[in-house]
Length: 387
Image (cartoon, rainbow, N blue to C red; front, side):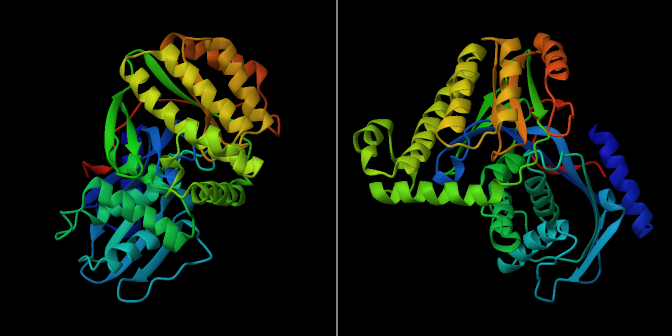
């Protein structure tokens, strides 16, 4: 799959610029196994990078011009100078993710050079699998190959990519998506402490498949509702006099939760219990205990549905269909920001086909579509690949 994507990106570069690229980099999308909306609460998450990626083929220029060809958008072009202030553009929107990363690198005084770039990817868009972070991290990884940028670690690149989305694109995302894209380890999920930025590899058990099932419910409310949830979490943390809900445990919440607005209490309860579930899930997955992982994923979904209120009926239905097939042998939950998007399931490989059959028979999206199903493996994070 990646070889085809690399070939397509190389071809686009050669067609646009009349020469072969000197460097090719990739950065993966991600799926979050458990730990939803905990990242911006300084908590814990357990995502893995997936084998769907953004690939950039590039060559340094002798001047200070950056020229980008988007192979997936009919060769759309963005061009600008590193010597001029970078500004957001109304169209094409993808250009802002590239400009934003370069803007952050320039702010840090790093020695950038002009670049010709062709970009292509196969991370499904609009599915909550973080195609935007994949693009941002790929751009950061490309420029990190320049002389004088060797000191940038994968976490540094992730934080640059996050800052670009926060400051330039205007998306107030946490740091999970960028960290897993930059620092993922093949065959492993990564437990991330979103406060300390420490990461711990957690092996995906042999014989377990990662299934991502797209509901085709468009995530139309996610930005406004995301910001509302974030403010509610901040209000709860402020009430308890702590920096973030990471610092509140369940006994404290149960003792003093009655002081909170009832809706804010439910939001806080999701975050507090979800953090505990992530820690338990890392232990269960590390021991290869899929039944226990399944229990935790189910509890996570119920919490997202009832306390955080970010699922929708078709997502709940999709989870139920998968759960009825896998029983206690694995786990399934909504993944991503909510209000549509995807469901993630961790299932024994022998149950992949039965799940696919049941979903094909029983599920239809808002326009009568079948679910699009991706069977993934845990992939390595961003880096250079053979040009």
